[in-house]
Image (cartoon, rainbow, N blue to C red; front, side, top):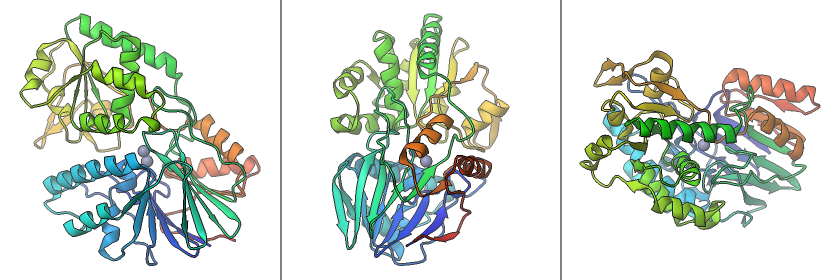
Length: 418
Ligand SMILES: [Zn+2]
Ligand SMILES: [Zn+2]
């Protein structure tokens, strides 16, 4: 057996690992998003013909480069049903944005179509047998339908965590645990820090929303379409069902899809009720109405790259406020606004005058959860990826002190197992 680390080694973005058993299995195939001046980064091409791709969840750093595999291979793609449907939506949108920004796609349109036709969905705990290798998907607690991939071959167990969360959120139960695996490939995003107490954050967010709204402003929450939009709706509506909330951008369609998969969320009944009590922006002219009404606006994009959120930001009145609730990659508008106070619009730097805050509602495991996960999974060998280089290396070093055989691979590294 062998592992090829084709992406997300010492970085967040372009997740892609190839496991070779009697089958060549690619775990995720994402891209690393940059802004206009910098091209996106892609994983290295797989060295062998790919039989199967497992998509852990449809965030673009895990699915965004999937079509490229169909230029030279014809693998089947396995994911949960929500990952397939949401993945289709996000891939189409990402193709549109890439063309807008760079004028051309990094893969053929026909490959995009082939990728979509090659999905075989499977629920949590169901098994797919591929030759002598068996695949089981397990709940990762990160976003609706997110999965860890457990592969069994020759009496060995290999677990790929994908992105996961080990504590409960409004939308999800904690990630499931598989004990005593031989090899674990784990994300390491927040290996260096714990997140603030979630309940406190929820109270703070809703308090701030009430204050801004009663003062006549808009509270703008830029949010990822999948996961964060639904979590924010649930956080706000479960605490104050009368607070006016508008939802705009691709989060609307993503929320509709999520509602169709009740078994992939913690409390589908409550979520349906919350969805019924928010207002949906159905056409562009609704936006001027939204801006005239004191309310909360949950809008894509989470990092202000594309989507209507940037337009809202530039039109807010002086009683308004913006709160980021998620990670913003360097060089994105979200990052520039948080760190330097500006966004870019048509090549110009614009400095919004409203207060900007950040509340850390992460959908990833915190430092203590990462250690707890590794201790419970109790792997014979652990590979730390999906974190910046310093985080992955430090995490592996600390795991070694705890007695684990841990390692942070570098991009393109090949590791023999057995
Ligand atoms: Zn993710
Ligand atoms: Zn990720």
